Image 1 (cartoon, one colour):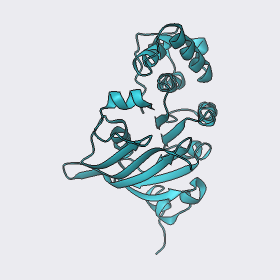
Image 2: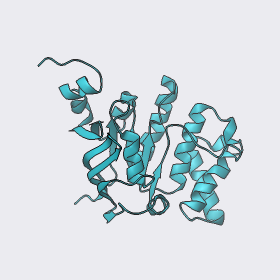
Image 3: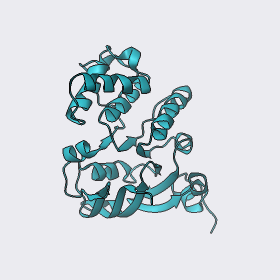
Image 4: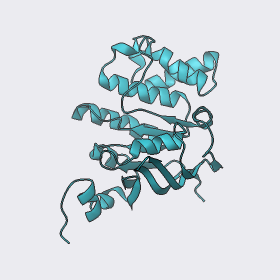
Length: 243
């Protein structure tokens, strides 16, 4: 029986009259890559906040690796194996790439000394940043900053990796390069949830797709088939569907 890395059960969250999570439910199998799409304002990033504990749901449950973490803080969830990237990269700009990686390894993964250093160097090689190890993070290109987001998340030794629009703003060639890196991460066995507007990037990696709108799940299934559903084309792509 395949275990579940994550399960959301009837999550609800509202800010005043604005609902950002509406009875949101789905599961993620261990080792699976799940894509999340939806229009701007659909509640995708807030969903990540609820998963990682930076915001608390009004009701519902978050189960991580079989454990109810609904009331657990963000730091504890991170140390338990959740790590995320952000839409806008947030490195420690005054530290080098290697130092950024070491912060994640020591603070999130509780690694020390030579073991932490070796781990960070291995991840930097995996994310194609090893040649930038001694460069200050503030001087990186956008693609390099995106790769550093990946690096810092992976240095936390995650069981679950949450990617928030990591392909946004990249050129086609840069996007293809990043897709290859994410494929390798997926093949290593890390469970992934990936929010993305660059749909072809998702389709190249994910095993399953969930579509949300106004905080509610409107479709779920095989990525290619799900993208062809009339309700998805109408709500997400803006294509009118005949009644």
